[in-house]
Length: 123
Image (cartoon, rainbow, N blue to C red):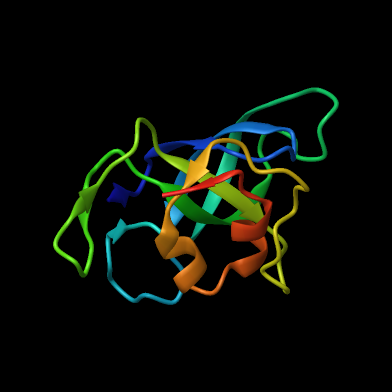
């Protein structure tokens, strides 16, 4: 679970390295976001040659969280870091062409099949 102002690692090749969560659109007064949710982030650190620059505001989907979450079968899963993938504004397709590190299976069930196909590992 991530809350407002949480710092998130960016797990794609858009050039952004660290982003800060600034909003959860379309969810009313919900203050926490989990795996598979779309959030609004601002880029805090970025590569000089990347397409994303420091200060850019974008939508992203959360693919990993440090806080464990429960699956339907009763198992719990957690990751080593909080990570997100940057999305295009209207199409909600990934901006990058590569995904680094593992992603959660819940990302595919949330409707992000393209991100799941780009990932090397799905847990």
